Image (cartoon, rainbow, N blue to C red; front, side):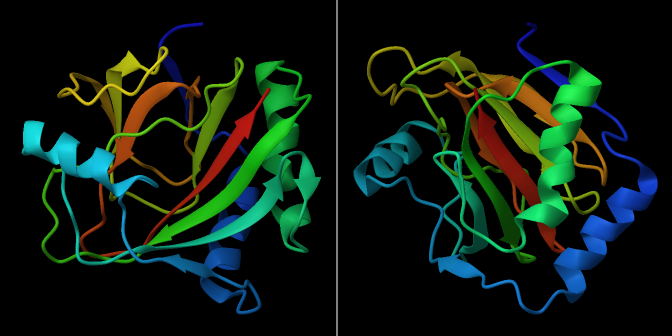
Length: 199
């Protein structure tokens, strides 16, 4: 596979609308709140920021809702978003044998937003896996992919940017789960993506 692939209109426009409306108007989704964008080990983010002035430490956090963990459905809202897993098989001809995580992320507007990005991270390294990021909402908050991937230990040096992916409702991004990546925050609208890590 190439370093990454993007797919416009990954699902049908009607389905795109349905998922966006679900995010905006389904008030029963139990959102959890992560108070910042630091890595699980905050010292890693601190060291990275020392070496890269483009890493943002925003004063806000992120809302999220987990749909699947370790191939187990843990949310009653899963069925609404299961079309994305099915489309990986039907459209990309990739068999999804194990869903390691399926999660909705929701970032609120950040008025001090710039082109800076949050702390670079990878999602999964234990064995080969892929990440599909699906953009539920519109046009703010790039995904930044870096040239570097996790090998055998954490890389704290400044990363070189491979690509900045502009979000667009209905678009999907596919890449290896050990590649360092980061998100940018929206300035005027919410940013919502679905993150699916699978083997």
